[in-house]
Structure formats: structure tokens, C-alpha cells
Image 1 (spheres, rainbow, N blue to C red):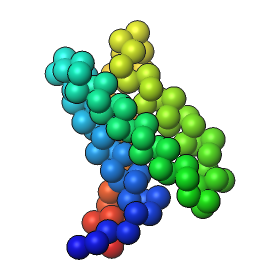
Image 2 (tube, helix red, strand yellow):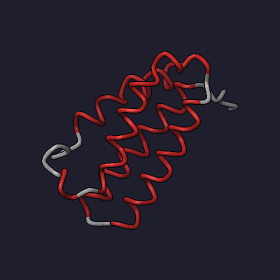
Image 3 (tube, rainbow, N blue to C red):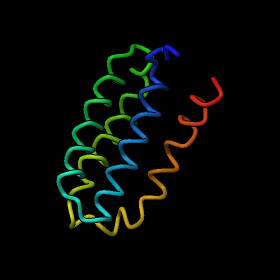
Image 4 (cartoon, one colour):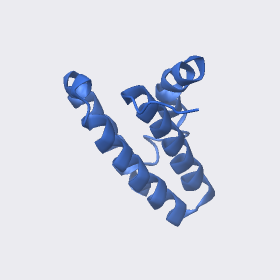
Length: 99
């Protein structure tokens, strides 16, 4: 199966990385957390390379900012359980499963 690298593909993969980052954070795996955040930021860069994502640039910048702050323990209350962040990515993953 050769999956086309679309913005939706990258967003679904970003959701998996963010979920991994949250799991690492919750389990105290600081190295895994930092690595997942770095991979997430790389995926965001790929997303922004698509012309059709330019109108959503502000949304993606906010998302990048949220991801960058996942390792900041002073923001723990904001990301208490991460469910809202995980739910943000659910539609992207669902679309990839349907295609």
C-alpha cells in the first residue's frame, strides 16, 4: 500500500506522535517526550509545505505552540489529561482509515 503524503496523512501521523508524547509525559519518560515533540514539530513543518494549508497557517502555528509546551511542567494544568488534544486529531485519523 502506497499512501499518498497529503496534509491529512501528516495530520493523522501528527496525532499519533502527540499521543505518544502525552503517554511519555504521563509515564515520566522525558527522553521519549522530547523525541516525540521533535518528530511532531518535523511533521508540522511538512504540513506547512502544502499550499492548501496556507489558509490554516494560524491554526497550525497555535498547534505548534501547544506541542512545544507539552514538556513544560508548569503548563501541566492546561494539558491535564490530553484528551482534548487527542480528540483534535481523531477526525484526521478516521479519514485515513476510510480512504
